[in-house]
Length: 380
Image (cartoon, rainbow, N blue to C red; front, side, top):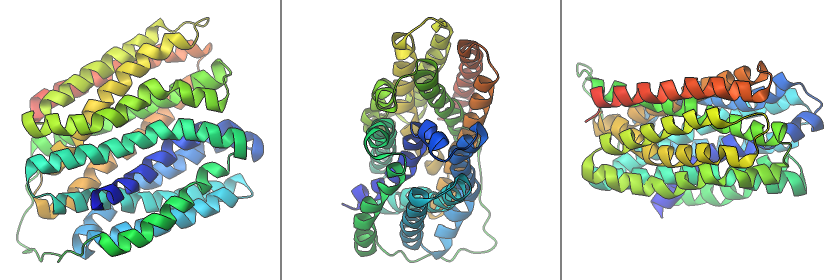
């Protein structure tokens, strides 16, 4: 039950990345904003999230991760309410930034509680796989749920949907998340950071840069280039998002048995193949042209995510779980925000749209290959 509750934390954080993507055209029309304002609805959340993850992770090590999780749920819920009732783009972007604060508390807090509760490395790897799978499930639910909500209830509902989830999760968390005695460390103790920790976090950043950037590119391709509805586009993204949810626990088990290098290498190789498949998309292509991209990206990241998170957390002592989680999530979310901005900028300056996709194919493929090399040099 505790693990399920902790998975709700990452589910909410990841849901508000992808559920908003399919609502962007409706937000732009409903609030009469520009493309820049539309982009800040996504970027404002991710930038604040990335900026505060390290601070929130280290803070949890000092004051206890239970307090961090409870505060994260409360802040995220309050900000979601403001997002869903915002009368203008300025307040919406500000509320999204506050949502980022709540997310920055939840991500390292939930992962650190898992680290505290699972002392056995194999059991921890399996639990991290389930946790990562819950985050991936949110990526699956986001476009589909967002498409349904936007089509039937309007764009505000994609934020208000968080409220009943938090209304249940917050009191349950108050009762079952354990209190942990915060260890007092000797001030002379130095933390050793090795190549395995650095390498895992660099690969985590590259993963989200290309992965989230490609997901945004696919969403824009379906809605703005092929002119599909938000609901249809959400359903058409299932081939990339469903493997993320299904394969997270599988990756956790593989990591527990063989170590993180094997699933990381497999995931990075598939990611590279998926990026290069974008070269086959032409101006006259239809949806079928991007299905290979979706499948390779979804399966690749499904194996990669849990393995790279476990590699980073296992590289530091258990009493620094908050710090390890904060650094890893900072790498993933911070560089992921850069990826969203970079991919969006390249596509907005490319005519026709498919020319930008071809540029992103070479960029993404090269970064996946770079990550594969770093994995073999640093991760056991």
